[in-house]
Image (tube, rainbow, N blue to C red; front, side, top):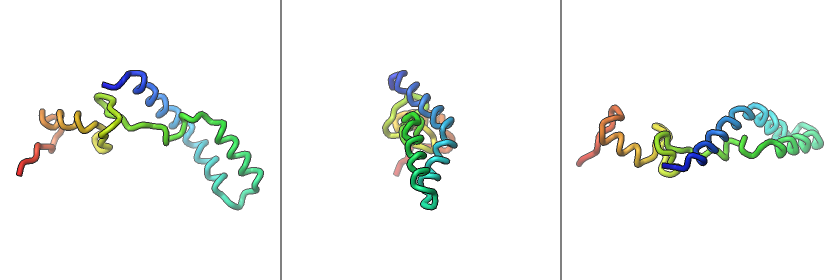
Amino acid sequence: MAKTSSINRNDKRRKMSKLADVRRKKLKALIMKKETPMDERFAAVLKLAEMPRNSAKVRIRNRCELTGRPRGFYRKVKLSRIALREMSNSGLIPGMVKSSW
C-alpha cells in the first residue's frame, strides 16, 4: 500500500489539472500561434509560468485504484499488475482467466 500522503498529493494534482486545463490550453495555443505578436506571446509564456506546477497534466502519476502502487499500472482496468492478478485469480474480473497452454 502506498503512503496516504502520496495518494492525496496525486489526487490534488488531478483536481488542479482539471481546474486549470482550459486556461492552460488557451495560453499554449496563443504561444504556439506564429501570427501573434512576439510581446503577446512572451506575456502568455510568463502567465503560463506563473501558474502552479501541479496544475500540469504531466505531473499526474497513474496509480492503482486499490493499492496506490505507481508502477506496473494497466490503464484499461486502472489497477497494478499485482492487484490485477489477485483479482483475476479470485474471479472478480469478468472474462479474465488464468492462461494455460
